[in-house]
Length: 324
Image 1 (cartoon, one colour):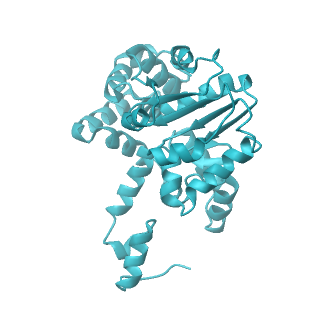
Image 2: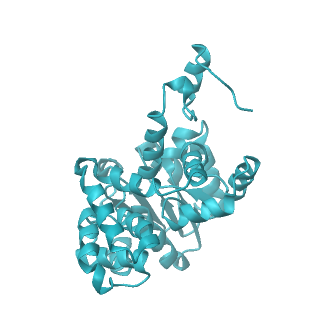
């Protein structure tokens, strides 16, 4: 992965692997900067140095989405660590932690030499929990950005001569954010020999510069066909973090073609399949929510994913039709 080896090398001293003390390390940065990706790669690189290990995704969202979310995450960690984390040297990665309660509940007592890696957008949480070693994930350099974009757009590390300047223009627009570079590169790859198409799309992005990240993500969503858009919105509203097999069964029951739809969404960096579960970046999920919210008035929207919205629709008799 572009720039990842150098970032892991920068991060390694924060782990202080030679110490037998329990050590917590924070990974902090803005949305789309690559915190989760870095944590995943560190987990894969160093997991062999520990007796047991566990990686937990989307802590904040799981706690918001599920009534008993915190306990379900604790159960997952206990199962991964064979319920012996208090006596074993373990590696735990907690992705997207929102508050001190989550951190305290999920970590608990661990054995000597254990390492806890926490990703978050809020540096204050880490400081309040006494995490002294905090690694800030910074934007990709221009060189790293161009390599990542070209790997997605051309399947090589540099642009062919007719696209050098255009590629640099797209890279400047993405401003070093890996998520945007991947989304743009994957979207453009379908038209990698059409310079006029590139120019038109770049101009379209520049027409509303104030929308920034949302504009880029919507740019890729707009290129999907109807069924792929429906699948994307369903995942954003209901199925993020769900088992891939379950999502496919539900889509099949709706006469979708899940293998094709999911394959396209993965190829365009709009979702990922990790550990047999379907995941989506928070920024992409928020864009999906915004698309639904702008459809119609509450009672006529195609999807309701918040409990309070569903309750309001039922209480105020706002239902216009029910699909069975």
